[in-house]
Amino acid sequence: MPPTWRHGTAIHRALETAYRSVMAGIPVATTFPLALRTLNEAWVELDLPDVDGWHSKSISVLNRTLQHNVLPLDEILGVEMSFQDEIEGFKLSGVADLVLRINPDVIEIVDHKVTRTPQTPADLLADHQLNLYAWFAKRQWLDTKIIRGTHHYPVLGTTVTVELTEESIARVISSIIDTARTASQDSTFEPRPSGACEHCQWIDRCPAVDAKLATSLR
Ligand code: SF4
Image 1 (cartoon, rainbow, N blue to C red):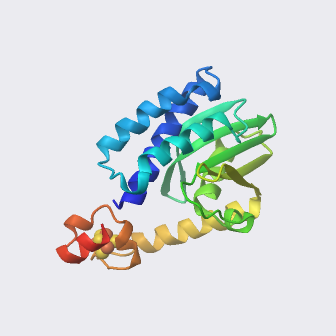
Image 2 (cartoon, helix red, strand yellow):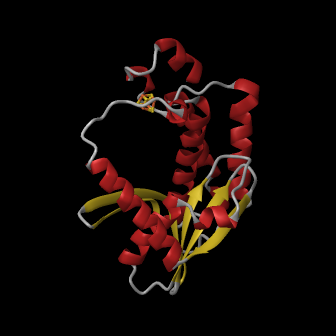
């Protein structure tokens, strides 16, 4: 996994610790020491380099995110919440970073994005991950009328939120089913190098990518 991805994973783990603590009744602004311990453990476990003061910047991001919370955390339904369901014979699953109850009619699905480049509301409306989780949420909490999708940008201290619609959810589910159907009819599983190799966790073992390229992409 490239360092930027591992860095995102470390921040995610630290936020997971913080929001689980909030779920257990601890005020978000006081969760920093717990989250910092998780960040440091993840930093070592993921073998992250400390280029350009990355570690201290990450600590600042974490501290600011928890001290100046921008998320509606009054009722947390789940942290790293696993969903599973089935449609047309295909099993779908996913893990949402954070699921929040805003009021009896509204649920918000939050995805943390460790980047300086926020997406637009239109991007979020087409986002596969958010719409898939909204589909799960609609099936799990049948009385919920509105599902919102949010990208939470800890580095920027901001969020982008949209209301996911019946149409946006149906479009994404239909696309996922089409992809699953195509994949299920594909009986050859040869690796096909592409731009995706840069983010592939199997690159070190992939027969289609030579060691030199793997090292340059890592
Ligand atoms: S490294 Fe191999 S398995 Fe991974 S995306 Fe590239 S071709 Fe596919």
